Image (cartoon, rainbow, N blue to C red; front, side, top):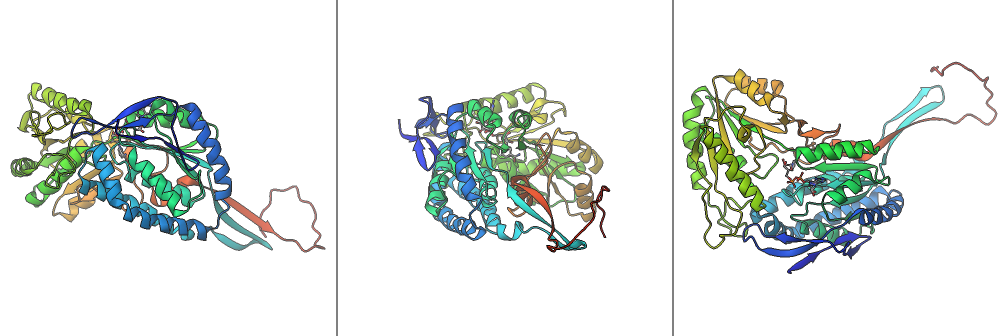
Length: 498
Ligand code: NAD
């Protein structure tokens, strides 16, 4: 029923193995389309095509590669509305939020258009008498990207523009929940003039992911998703000899100091906690109030949460959209129930919210919880919903200890007027991305994105300079051109320089 989403292999829409699954609209709870699922055979077919295409693509001039990326940039800008509507329909997020993710994804494409600068190697003349040295960066070959549901455009954009610009062929395996954006991007690459096979899309779940991680024709795997799957992908693909970067889940804390502008902190934490119904890896599900900040912050965040309009993503009045699935909704309600049963105070309760006309949608309201023990799963685990847990500590040192005790280390923020505490926070916190009075410190496309600890497995962060390092291998070349009549004696000693 509705539309059909197929694989995109060698520039063609290809139905898969016969296996399909429904694509749902999270606001209505209704089926909107059908997704064709691949298997190991589909992956093998795409890898064979990619391997052939990559050989030629690697030989294309940097000028031609960047011209295609420039054209792609304009095509994506022109298609922003189409992408945003498709994302909103399948993910649930507001159309405005979806446009935001397209714009943030474009930052990496813009970074990739300057690959002419970044691929310059080093050169040293006369490292030894008559000997020069230089370095070149070459592509890995065929690489794969496996991406989560929560940013169906932006997260793949963290990967494919840099992979393609550096001469790789890229196979994308997007989330099964919101697959349409990836096929739109495949169409746009084709319109931009990218040769068939350099960007392909395979849909599916675990079977396809495992086939990508194990296929000997694939040299690198980029993954973004939950921590257990990130670990699985990191282990499986590493064992198969691939370069792997696997970004996992998060449980980001925002520390609110007593000297902070509390009203400002509350608006910022509200956007971090409840934007996109909390389904962001850089969401802020935990606020840590220090000393006297607690009571005024609690009052201010309660007021912010109660203001929010919950509704479908295609209604311009909506602040907060539905969750992705009925299971995600059930998890939020269950984890709130469990916190309450453990003696926590439910300051704002979103559990019983019903949106009129959307009774089958996956809606919950914003929820604020406090007085929760630091070992309770509703605090320690990633809820991935619009739930803010407010933890109270006595001083700055206790706040640092609490944040650093989390197994996750994706993002964190401090709200303060004190340069002293801000500087100490930046220095002492064990987290990859830090905001000073900024709740969602997602680095711009020409910096790199990545967490610490259980939020990232592998050496490389995503996009920006780290993306360039991930998708290329360096060669160091030492060159000597002896004169035709130059005579030297053979030496059995290890070469030193003269
Ligand atoms: P997920 O881990 O369920 O799925 C991610 C990808 O893995 C999807 O393509 C999915 O098809 C595939 N997958 C799912 N189960 C699998 C299995 N058993 N074996 C192999 N592959 C499997 O994640 P999600 O629910 O789509 O996304 C939400 C999660 O992603 C959250 O944990 C969030 O924090 C995380 N995330 C992290 C970042 C980051 O940058 N660190 C960014 C976005 C999302």
